[in-house]
Image (cartoon, rainbow, N blue to C red; front, side):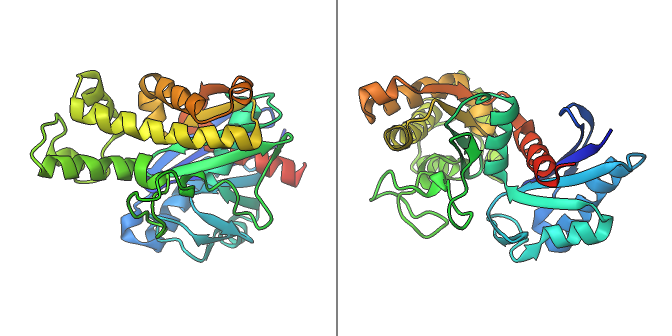
Length: 313
C-alpha cells in the first residue's frame, strides 16, 4: 500500500505527517522552523522532518507541502515572516528525495483538509478563515478548491473592512489582517498599555508574538482590555463574513487558526451575530458557522489530499 507525506511549514514550526492511502496518520514529526536564522536553517529543519518520516518508509508516492504566502510554479514568490522568498521548494525536495512533490498556500491546504476530512466535509461551497499571526482564507466552490486565474485567490486577510484603519503589512490600509490577526491584537495591547491601561498581559508575554493560550487566559479572567480588543477583532471578521456570505452563498464558514482554536467558543458568537447584521437575511440563513475540526492538522490533511489526487497512484 502506498504512503504519502503532508508538510506544514510555518513561521515557528514545521509539522510533517506520514499518511496511508485512507488518510490514517502513521507517524508525525515536529521541528522548530528557526526562520529567524535564514533560509538555509529552515531548509535544514525541513530536511530533518522529511528524513525522519522517510526512515523505514520507502513506499512514499508523493509529498504535499503547505506554506504561507504566494505560490507560483513550485516557487514561493512571497511569504511573510519567513526567509523563503523566491525559493523553489518543489525542485529542492524532488531533487533531494526523487519523490513527486506539490506545494500549496497553507490556508488553501487547510481549507481543503477541512473539506475532505473536517468541518466542511460534504459541502458544495465553503469558506475558511484561519486566524493566527496573519489571516489566511480558503475557498471551496462547486466542490473544488478555488485558486483564481493565477493562483492568488482567497486573500481574505487583505480585504478591506475599515478604510481609515491601520496600515497592513501588505501596504494597504484597513485590511482584515491589520485589525484581527495576532499581530494586530498585539499592536493594540501594546498601544493601550503604553497609555496606562491595565491588563493581565505582561511585557514578557509580548517579546515574541503573544500566544493564543495567553490571550485566552486573560479573556477567561475577565481582563477588560483583552476582551475589548478580541471582541473588536471578532466583529471585523464578522463584517467581512457578511460580505462573503452575500457574494458566495456558502453552506459553511469554517473558523480556524490558533486564535479560533483557543477562543472560538468565546468569539464565534460575535462573528456570527455581526455577519448576520452585514448580510442579506435569507442568504445568511443558508450558512452555518463551524469551528475547525482538524485544528493543527488541517494543513497536513489538505496537503496529503492534494498530492494524492495529483499523483493519482
